Image (cartoon, protein in one colour):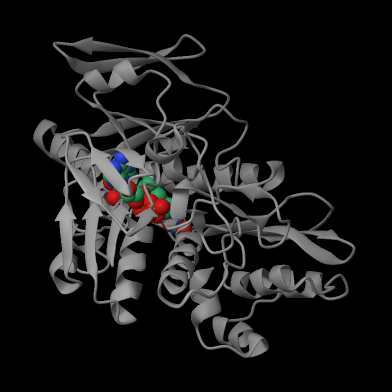
Length: 412
Ligand SMILES: Cc1cc2nc3c(=O)[nH]c(=O)nc-3n(C[C@H](O)[C@H](O)[C@H](O)COP(=O)(O)OP(=O)(O)OC[C@H]3O[C@@H](n4cnc5c(N)ncnc54)[C@H](O)[C@@H]3O)c2cc1C
């Protein structure tokens, strides 16, 4: 059997590794538009913050050799021809398959794609982006930057460059940073604390409207209030869209069944896949690393053993990078809010019928694995939740409450 993957990202690498570890002996071809061994986008900001490049290769730099993979790199797949069981690439190659694993992730969305023609304007999504930013900062001796977009990836970008010693201005159109992973109060708290702890200048309810260049290099940006700022580095991270066109013809993602099949013989997973939420059942793209892993493992198991089903995605968000100020959330922020705050720590759970609907934990997140399990279990917690939120316990306490080793805590 010949297996082809479109993408060499986190989902595809997990899928291929699972196949090989489970004894699959057929041919495997992995296709990517980039030119690297599989890397972790979660880790690439650490490279920019000063860690060695090799740390991004989460399954080893020799992955293709180790797992006997033919790698077709630097050539995007532009079409999946499901009738003929083949994929076509931009360079005119084609690869036939018996089974296809389609995991192309998502790409940055740019309000003004033409800005990228200007030296000093970058996205913040791929290792290609990080290598280019790193080289530019070094060569030009860049000391300050504007980051446009204060969602998860924008904050990650701002903190990575701040950690590297740059002076950062973070521009976000909403009333608070991390607006998708917080409610208003939690987001305001996180925004205030991040500003206090880092000195990053945060401009809320603001956008970058225009840029000016000198000899092709970024010179300044103009904000929506008309003010301007000189800078030679602009990172644009205001959103992503799924790379589903080669398979679906549009960028709305790839709907999948519980076996992670888009159609018979074509599996999908990760940031391009549309799945159901484990708690609410709502269809959507739940673009996190743990979801991608579970989906890829489901697909590998089904391909090899024709059994198993994906239990559903969870919209967990875990921001624990570059600074000792973690922020974790999941679920939906509606229902009765139960809040506990002490200094730099802020914790809120939303309850409905006594069960957890969603939660936000900021500053000290060591019980977040426990809250996550309570959320998934749908147990009534209204009698005890305030005590849990305010408890100054250590990880080991919660692990013993769950009767677990370390895994639940590691995930959250
Ligand atoms: C900066 C950053 C930080 C992140 N931090 C976290 C975090 O802390 N925690 C967390 O849970 N998640 C995080 N994420 C999200 C996480 O990385 C993704 O959920 C995960 O990588 C999804 O895996 P994937 O395989 O679907 O996509 P990716 O890992 O993005 O891989 C997609 C692959 O498809 C390839 N590709 C795309 N289009 C084509 C094409 N047309 N032809 C061929 N190949 C193609 C790409 O080159 C790549 O190899 C972060 C993401 C970014 C960008």
